[in-house]
Length: 249
Image (cartoon, rainbow, N blue to C red; front, side, top):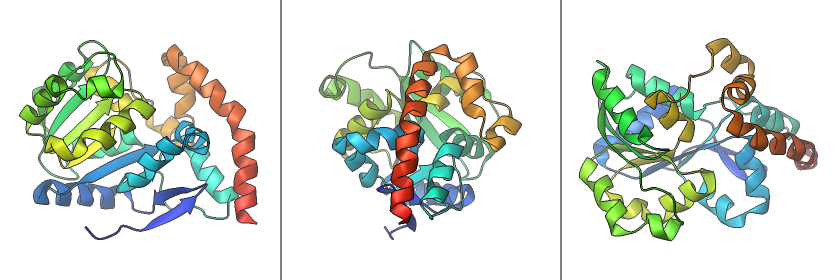
């Protein structure tokens, strides 16, 4: 695979591809059955990567790392490295749902309750290009426990072009790093919010909020479990801004 263009900000190799170009890479990977790990790095991911070397390593192991969120765009500007595109996981999947990469089989792994199965069913009830290849929730456990053959076999049986995970960022990335070569799925990404949205457990933020960078406020209001995480992000933000300023020199 040809190395894709990136721009490093705070140690993270952010992709400079547009969402249209990423869709083209998804199509190519699906056709060629070549590996494409897409990581969508939001402010929470940037903060975690500063203190968790393993998590940062998993980001670097990804073929594409998108800038997921207005705060990350602002950090890049402070660092003197403005990123050309903001591509959230929700936006990318919306574009795939609209047909930007043609017909694809999509499998879902993780989530709460029956969210993974529900998401697959929703796709199959639509007339769009995405085919639900199945959903599987392995339950709770360590990365090692969730990597047992009993949990990998259902994924292989999906015969998916894309596998979308919802295990929590750190655990999901670690699970991908450990198992992706043995799954037979070319495109893989941890997109927890996507699984919930497609399953109908949450409602996507209005486009005007997403475009103006206030999607986080909508999600915090509608998903109370996220408020603690967002509060932690705000605490970390001043330090990240100073680190970005130092990077600018």
